[in-house]
Image 1 (tube, rainbow, N blue to C red):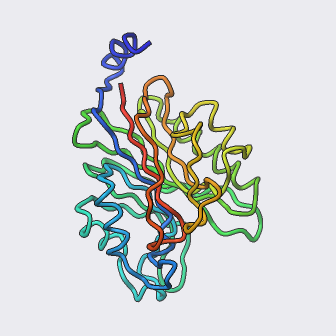
Image 2 (image 1 turned 90 degrees about the vertical axis):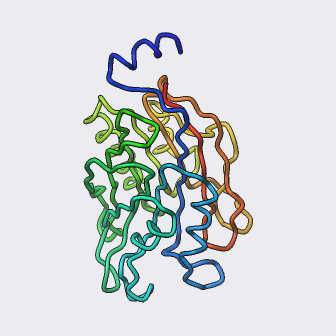
Length: 253
C-alpha cells in the first residue's frame, strides 16, 4: 500500500511531509486553574511542543475579561507562528472562538457556523488551507470546539467537518479540537469511518487537567491511507488551562 501511495500522491499533486506535528489545546481563554491570565504559560507549552500546527479553543479576542488583549497577536509573537482567529460569537466586548497558529503560510481561510439547537452557545469550524515549511502541497486544517451538552449539535459538528473535507478532495486534511465527547460517542465514531483518529487505541485523557479521566480533545487526519501516525501523547501541563494539550506527530506519504 505504501509503495502504491508513493506513486499515487505525486499524481495528485501531493508531496510527502517529513513530519507534521499537531497540537490541540483548549486554553480556557488564557486563564489557568490558579485563576491567573497568563499567555506566556500557554506560549511556553506551544514552543516546547515544537508543533507546526496548533489548534486552539476558547480563545478570547479583546474581551473585557482578558483586559482587551489581542490574544492571537500575542501568542503569534510569543511562539513565532502565524496566527489566525475564527470568531464563533461576540462576547464580553470582544470576540470568542477558535484559532490556529501555523509554521508556514496561510493561503486562504473561512469560518463555518455549526448548526445549533435553540439556546445553545454558537460553535464553529475554522477552516484554513496552509502550506507548511516542509510540505510543497497545501494541507487543509480545521479547528473546532463542539457543544458540551447537546449530542445533536456534536453530530452536526462532525457532519460539517466531513462536508468541508469532502468539498476539498484534492487536499489532505487534519481536524483538531475539543469535541466534548469521549471516544465511544456517536459523533466520534461517525468520523472514524473516514478519518484516522490519532491514538484511537490509546487512553489519551485530557480532562480534567489535574487528574484526567476522559479524552475530550482529538487530532484526526484523512484520507486514512495517506497518513501515518508516529506518536500521540498528552502533555504534562497541569496549570495553564483546565485541559491538557494533546500532541500528535504525523507523516503524509
